[in-house]
Length: 246
Image 1 (tube, rainbow, N blue to C red):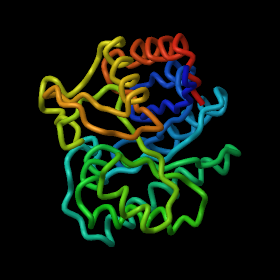
Image 2: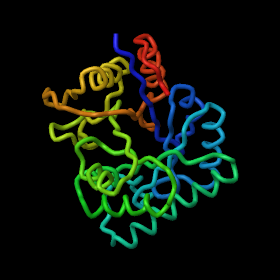
Image 3: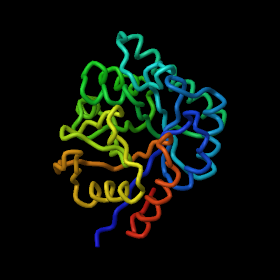
Image 4: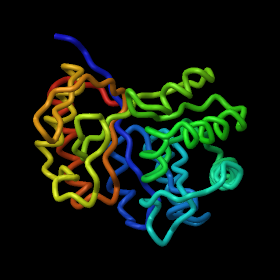
């Protein structure tokens, strides 16, 4: 039987306050750093939880839009977007330095993530931000996306991400949160969703199509209803299958 090793990541520092319950079941976390949520206090608290559980730490920058939680695309100049994203990551880096922790990866949030997946202009800005850090950090990207191609063309170290608790369209975009079936909140269905991607390299879309996908890290959103229970179930079922979470 083939042995699998995967990463499970979770979006945190977003005001839910469940980080201490999530950390035992993940291997990476993405910390909101002021764009859609988060401040120095929340970043510091989450970093401490991550360190205590040996969880890799990532920055989770966003369009600067706390009012809409970063889930609406903003029309910004490239310079303004670059500056905002760079400053968000720098704020997290400053706290990481004080807490003697390191930045492992960067994962854009919400509308920024979705736009960079299909829009070259946005993807280029994100890649330039990562390059400007001059640090050996990974960039989480969706398979088959525009940002994947831009990042690879610029020599960045990427990690393919799949979404454990989200349904997909047949073009590999995520089903809009405005739709009733956007989220997968049943623990066993989340496991089946992840295991299919892992074991077959296929994704079953909302329309029942099977599409090729690559995924090395799988995300559960910290603000998903019953996120803790979903993660516990996913972790347990993966362990039962002999899948190493690292």
